[in-house]
Amino acid sequence: MKRKLPPFPALRAFEAAARLGSFRAAAAELCVTASAISHQIRTLETFLERPLFWRSIRQVTLNEDGRLYLARVGPLLDELDASTRLIAGNACAGPLRVKATEGFTKRWLIPRLSDFLARYPKIAVRIETGVPPTDFHDGKRDVVIHWGDDPVPGVEVKPFMSSTRTPLCSPRYLAQNPDLTTPRALLSKTLIRDQVGDGWKEWFSLVGAGDACPSGGPEFAHCELGMTAAESDLGMTLGYVAMIGETLERGTLVAPFDLESPTRTIYSVAYLTERVEDARIAAFRDWVFEQMLHNTLPEAPALRVAQ
Image (cartoon, rainbow, N blue to C red):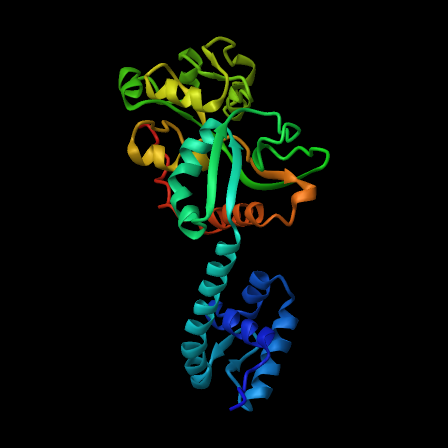
C-alpha cells in the first residue's frame, strides 16, 4: 500500500514548534524565520485536513489532535535521528588528530570525551597538548583548539567558548590568609602569572586598583600550570570561569570573590579550509558546539565569596 506521508519540512517544523511551544523558538532552532515555520505548519494542517494548534495573538498551543500527533511523531523523529547518527558515525572512521592546550584538554575535553567516543567508535582520537600558534604545515594534526579567535590564513576558525576570569586559590591558602576578605587584599598576596595572557591588571582595574597591581609573582607558560600551582598552595591565580566548574565541584580551588573580568573569546575550533567537508572533522566540530550549547556536565556551583 502506498504510504501517505506528509512533507518532511512541514513535519520537522511542527515537531520543533510543538516541542518548544513557540514558532519563534522553532525558527531559531531550525535557522529559518517564524513566518516560514507558520507556513510549513499550515501546509501540514492542510495535508491532515485539521488544525493542530490553538492560535491567539501572543501564543500558540497544541490542541488535542496536535498533542496526539506529537506523541506519535516525536518518537519516530527521535528514531530517525538515532539511525542517521549511527550511519553517519559508521561513515566516520580513521584517526582524528587534535591539538589543544593542556588546560582545555584536562578541564573541559577529557570529562566529556567519552560521549564523542561512544557516538563515533570508529574514529581513533589522538590528542596532543601544546600552546599557540595554530599551524597545520607539518601535516601532523587535523583539528586545533585555537586560542582566541584571531584569523589564520587558509584556516577555518570557529569560536565556541567565551569566558570571564576570577581569582582562585586553594582552600588551604584561603585559610592561611584570613585577611582575604576584600579584593584589595590581593595586592599583598602572591600572584601567579600566565605567559599566554596575564590578566591581573585588568582584574584589579575592576576594583579601582589597576595602577597598584603588583608586578611580581611566579610566571608559568600557560594557565593550566598556574591552576596546578594554585592547587599546590603557591598563591592566587586567575581562572577562566567557563573551565573551572569541575574544579570548584571537587574543591581543589575556591573563588574568594564574585568579581569577574570582562568576557573574552578564549577558544575556537580550527581546521584547514580545504578540509571543511571532512566527515571526521565535521563530526568533532559539531560535537564541540553541541556540548557548549547543551552544557552536558552538571552546572558549576556558584562562585564562593569569602565572608
